[in-house]
Amino acid sequence: MKNLQLISSLLILIFINSTFGHTIEEKYSSNPILEPIWNNKSLANVKTLSLNFSCHNLKNTENAYIVSNQQELTEAKGIVLNIDNGLAIPNAEIKFLKNNINILSNQNGEFEFSLSKDFLEDNIVITAMGFINDTISIEDLAKAPKKIHEIWLQTQSFNQINLDVVTVTASNINLTAEEIVQKARKNVSFNYTQNPYNQKFFYNYIKSNDSDSVYGFKAIVETFNSKGMKNSFRTNKNLYGEIEQFKTIGKRQNLKDNENNFVEMTEMFDWDLILSKSNVLYRTKSYSLTKEGVIDYNNKEVYKIRFVDKSPSSLASHSSHATIKESSGLVYIDKSNYAVLRYEHCIKKEPLELNKYPGKIVEQNQKILFSYKQKADKSHYIRHGQVTEEIILKSKIDGVFKNQIITKQDILSIHYKPFNISKIKQPLSSIWALENSQSNTNFWRRNPFILQETKLIFGTCM
Image (cartoon, rainbow, N blue to C red):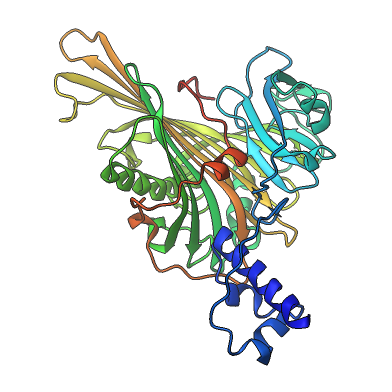
């Protein structure tokens, strides 16, 4: 009986390994509770085990995965809206309090999920920068599964002053915007791990133009940063990765397209405020800074600082040889420890001609967004990164509009592991989806992460 229990435990570990992609011995052999499995002499001669079983209600809350196989599901749809003007709030975080699951609203403020009914007792908290949080019961949402529930968030104020108005208080009057950014730079080594770490991301790459619907792919990518969150002019040299799940979106892409697009995932980290040196945090003197006040974000007082590049043409362009015409944005810095919590950046490039678009003038605009989250050990990590690029094609002869192409990329953290790391040898820049890459329909149904848009809109910048 005792041996049967040990064998059963081992089989469960094998199932977990096949589901979540960890090396069993590496992850569990040091666990004192499971140590008898590895040291039990009765299992020494066991070469092959075969067993058919089904697993219900297995939730890997550490990785924020939902893999329940129950037939009955709780479905809910919602849209997050600004109560002041009725506009959608994109990238709002929807957090499940008990189950440690996080998803984001899409660019239209929409989200949806399908969960087993044991989630009914949970609540979700909806959070967005500049808005007051709201908490809703999943049971209430599930009562009308086909209804799109409207969730209205109220604009956050600090000391009864609207966010768009400069706030001056006794506690922050002594620090200039330049001094705050300088403190943020000096505290990077304290606020962000300087040691190697693993981080699992949901990666979403979608594209559309005037004549096509949205197409692209999504993937789960396990990454390994060999140097920690240290700044560099070449962030990709320290990044390694492997694909765990993969699914195409819209029309089928060929494998070469997938390879090129995973290269773009690597290039996303060049826009990260902490990892890259080419930004306002490390080139502060090149920017005009304005302190717009202090806001409340998740019960934290946060400095809101606007930056404008004084010489944008000197910046390197990540996606083409176009000269940058305008570069500006916002950075939000925790008042207590000077950790950057959010970074928004808008870039407008000078029109140019490209060989791939003969007879046309190309105008390019980009929006960059990165947000960071704090763990219990006080270290911060990348929570969400988003890069949206708009290409406008006009006739070279008369300047008449011809076409608009929009590409949107998201990386969303689903597991950050600074301890007991697993080294990965494959450079992140060279990974791509093979023919046999996993595409588990059941997995993607239960893990929406970000609801897929049917049409991309670039919108306006800050």
